[in-house]
Every structure is written in structure tokens, then in C-alpha cells.
Length: 156
Image 1 (cartoon, one colour):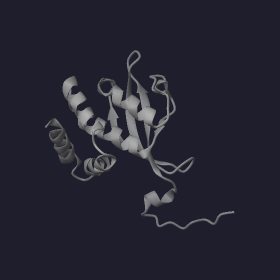
Image 2 (cartoon, helix red, strand yellow):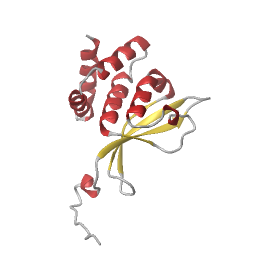
Image 3 (cartoon, one colour):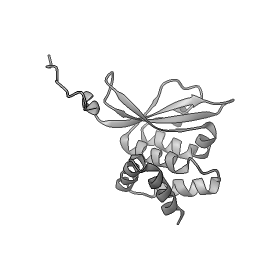
Image 4 (cartoon, one colour):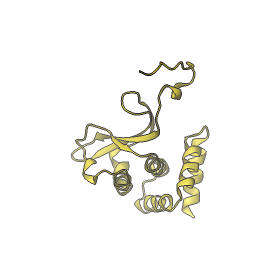
């Protein structure tokens, strides 16, 4: 039997043990379209804390559907799990979730398909360390400025 751990009330992430991961929640759209919400998770099983990272509408998700399929495949799932009727969240590993978060955050305000494809290609060309760096910048206090800098960097 394990002893109960005493935790300081201010340390929210200390409430759970386990690794950081991500999950993709599918939200149905009109017809057979879907949007997605990417959430960062801490912990495993019943003691999981989640924090929303970003949400993509069905139109936005359609622009980056290839990046969604790549993240799902790298997480060990079949692409068929990404369906508009899906109820359960799709678990992603940390590296896949970070890269997908960058794709969603950087491409969200952009409507031109050519520009979105260029951003996705630029993010896919980054090393894992670079994606973690940009993810921390984009999720930080000055996230909007970091997202704009990332889009500018990838436009060159």
C-alpha cells in the first residue's frame, strides 16, 4: 500500500504523476467535416489534468488535415481514428503534440492554402529541439509576438 503524498496547494501540476502528452478532441461540423481541439495533458489514467492549447474550426482543420494525419500516425494510430463522429479523445505523444500545436498555432490566421502548406513544410523541417523551443515561446506570455515571428521566419 502506498502512502498519501502531501502536496502544496499552489503546485497544481504536482498533483499528478506521469509524463506530459497531448490529446486531440474531434468536434463535428456540418456534414462530414470536423474541427479539433488540441489539449496538453499531464498524468495518466484517472488523475489527468488537461489544458487547452488551441482549437481549429472545420475550415481550419481542413487546411492542415495532412499534418493531423501525420501526428496521428506517429502516435501509433490508424488515420481512420480521425472521424467526424469520434467521441473519445485521440492520445498523442509529447513530440507529435508539440509539432501539431505549432502547425495549428502558426497556420490559424492564414487562409491561403499555399501559405499554409509552406508553414507546415517549414515546421516539419524543424528538429525536435526547435519545435520545443518555438512551442514554449508561442505558449508563453508573449505568445502572439512569437507566433508572428515564427510565421515570418518560415516565410523566408
